[in-house]
Image (cartoon, rainbow, N blue to C red):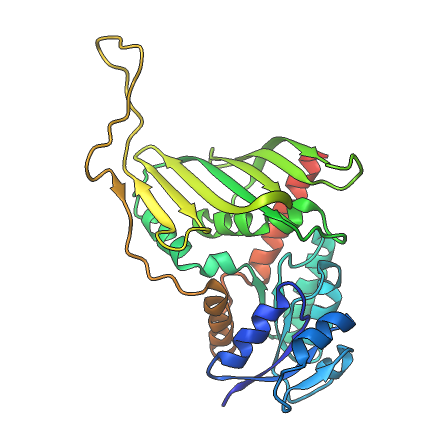
Length: 329
């Protein structure tokens, strides 16, 4: 029997869920809701008549025929809407960031426990095929001990008004690292926030984040950049890995070059040779990460399993965001 879904939010990212929920097998999109008249009109005009359209979420929450709800609304509404959906007996997939504080995260954790339903956070890069392959390679010791990670996430809007820059831009990167390396404690943060307009809104952040396993994350993020960039480099004792999500193909590669030791002849420079076989591009079939995410959500509903990006994971990412923001001031 198909799972019956309701979708709340048809804006910047909600339209992607709208597309997928109409395409996927084992899913019936029952209803959509969006309070913004422009988004509502734009994305509901061509919907099949069987899909109900609302500009109020109460109708979706109160419909006993709906099994699961996707929440793709502004972050300031996530906690309340997710609590309402869980209380109404619905499984919940909530977009990132899950909530805006640890206080909200604890409220949501209580709601999940009381409901017995599945809650999954939309950290879609945890379900990215290249990221999953990278995790397997690192666990197998491909790069030896990872010493530091560089992460860049830049794009040209949207600029959010209800959450800070870090929470909007760095959530996926922190979720990926938590998935790859497991839970870790932050031991220190150094960095800088900058505002283009000179006001209280952050438009660029660079932070060096030290973790309890002695790895360091160098993170640079901005929502006011002329080009979209999302890439990460992992540097270890046995080599390096590079993930670039903006590439159409070959998003992941390994450079199996160890750090050079000092030469006996006291040469002034140590050159890296382009030796054959040093660069390895794995053959990874990459599907749309969001499709992988929704399919896994459906699988967890059927099995009752905890998703990799379930409430416990969401709480840890919330705490990491709070800590980094707190260090930066």
